[in-house]
Length: 606
Ligand code: AGP
Image 1 (tube, rainbow, N blue to C red):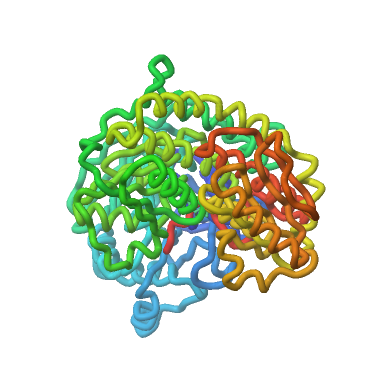
Image 2 (image 1 turned 60 degrees about the horizontal axis):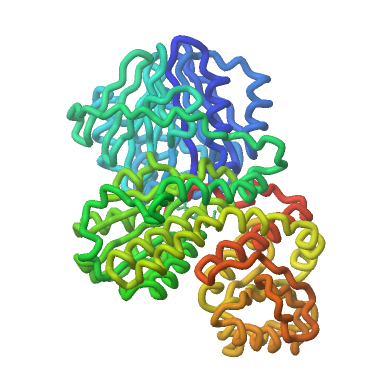
């Protein structure tokens, strides 16, 4: 939820730290700060709001030093202001932190009794004074080991010391932390994305480890201070495009990139010649898997729900899904013949990682569907199915959602065929249909001006409903989430058949209701539900697929027709207008579309 960077070099580091903080802003952007060390003096500058504010503030200071740390914050303890912004410093230590220290209250009491004076409301500040206290009587390494054993909760730390002119200490438990190797300089960062512009040689700390970085040497240690060796990974050097290009927002670009996302998945998994699916190196015999559990958060959870419908439709497997933050505390009954699939764009979501860790500890078969292949969830899954959609920078997930659905659908087809739940000719036909999906998405993306026009109805209303049945229900949830997180208006996704069990009371004149009613098996029933809300004054936006048959109903406020496809694939097309509806609603309100308030792209705290 926050982003940290550290650089130790043979040249001034403040501007390189600012550049890295810009790349980390997707992880948190309510405040930021940096500290550098020069000739025994720690220089510190912090600002509320975006990194732009920090850079302006920095211009007024002379931040000397070839060792430094930086931080972008998503507040957990203490309001977003300059005092609570990181770094936090004592007389001789400065720290940046991502995570939550769960025993900070007790530690604070102890440290105050030792005479330490606190300036902020953050949990992080206890770490500063704890290490300062231990350094009074211990050497650096022993002080770190002692401090880490005292801390409960999660952390990724970057620490500099006034009397240690050339080094940075990093430590990790529960929140990701990477080390990058450069020419006469080394780096510490929350993830590879922050380091990619400086190096493609990366090592990842594992939980409990800490490291000591100098500009020409990096040492790693386990929680007891014993040296450990770390692999140096070479990141994909393909210059993935991290820029907006001609688009106004990353989200707009990422919506338009969705056909490419789907083509990447087809390239990766479909054998074009034989119309077969290639998923290599699976460490288990898929035929022995008798049940599937899918786990994720937010949009990734909606992918899980979508996959549940496909698995149930195409296979005889038992399928359960769960929200990661629920799964991790549930009294789970682990089944060894079950496959646990974790969906995560960032691969760093704390709740999803904790659910994965729980399954690993119970020796379950774990597989992850991720976009960031060097992420913690990917590294700690037994098997990874990448979605290859390229960097998704907009906090509101769009192309990653279609990529997750695509990979899960492909995996479902493969499993259905291997388990003989799907006849070969149907399997092949479905693969052929799948290959046409990018073009269908391209056409559906052309629906634009109508959505722009109607978006204000949703932003001016006191709330809205998104209804769907069957395959359309997960998409209704996703459409409501998009509108909530971008336009800050209440929107609720609901099973269309459930409205009469209570939520119908919400319907009154002018309430906008999106009804997803493609001409699938649920069509007639959903049209009936639509008439129920129209009869009570709702303004219905009907989203269906093109057909020669007219929709039999009056008083439909607006209709959008997406391209035709087989029923399995219609959810991909129904999603597009909902993404655009949320985008244009937020645009009308003048909100920050790529960084919506209170949110962050990767939720690395629980
Ligand atoms: C979706 O638009 C949100 N940004 C959020 O719900 C997101 O899907 C969720 O936090 C999970 O993130 P992940 O896919 O990186 O694990």
